[in-house]
Image (cartoon, rainbow, N blue to C red):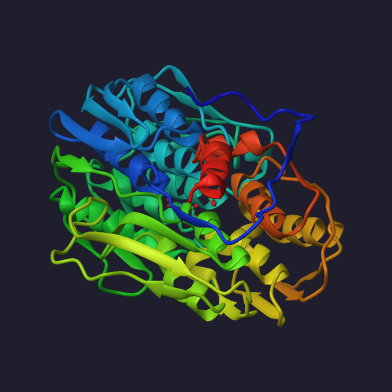
Length: 445
Ligand SMILES: O=C(O)C1=C[C@@H](OP(=O)(O)O)[C@@H](O)[C@H](O)C1
Ligand SMILES: C=C(OP(=O)(O)O)C(=O)O
């Protein structure tokens, strides 16, 4: 079982394996964190029992399961394999008087409070020490303006209904999850919701599209026709039987291994059409010099569920080109792209990701500090990073309890001997098997 405890203060060091030659591997990835946690929440709010198949088993997913059980839903697991678990979800009356641990999971701290505001009593939330620093103000203010009472502006807080819904204006430039969190429960609000964003552009639009498409697939009427305005009609959320797509963001370090070693990595069951941010890897890795091939599949996909899929293969020559990219829509790919940029032969500029300062850690500061600690040349800018080619040396790569920092350290270690990643176990947030999968990838022939 993945750990659901807080981060370890002085975590062990993991000697990142250095590749001895080009990697040739097929890597089958477990389910998407973003799809799993949306699907579980929607199933717990639905109008009858449903099934979420091939769901991710990880710390963030386990925290969502515990939260939904605390609020009164029944979730029973069956068929657990390396590919995931099938959750049989039976909604129940939403129960208050409970406490919820959000860990460091944005999807729990932002998606569950709107549901908790429908409970029959107060619901308290807390999380890891760093979770208390992650931005929550805009969604908590929105819930207040919709009728709820909330006693703080960040974790820890207690929320009390009743909440009837209606119109709300918020600044979601800090996280798309403020919008997704409101959207996911809104059909259960008496008046539904109209959300209006005012402020600098909302990041991670694909994640908002994922929320909208999964709601529509459950029969909810969502109008997203006007920029920065979303309207959800009140009504039932249909129970479904759905299968979760593989996690394409977690494909990032494995596909990066093809570029770093001049090898070939294949990910089976890549959805032909998806709202996952990781789909942008096809263009980003091609821009860095890789050849990306995906045979055509013959059917479409219903967002969040597998129907049309194909193998995706990335092949490379080990010469990595730097890139100039705006990652505003796909910010969670930044740590892997920055690691590749640190190994590139030409400079890179990553733009549009100031919101990463509110992620698991301040990812811009963390990436600059850790790449430079290994002798690199990485400069923080207001909204991103500038990374120039410079030879790297071994050393400790700190992860700051951030799963994507840990995997970025593993990518660097493929080429740079002597990299030791602190707290590789933090990858349990979304991929508990990361270290074993990494070794298996390097040993595959
Ligand atoms: O809704 C989601 O599942 C997510 C939205 C994004 O959050 P931000 O918009 O805060 O970057 C993304 O980075 C995160 O990993 C998952
Ligand atoms: C930002 C991330 O996670 P969270 O869902 O906790 O925001 C991430 O996984 O990169």
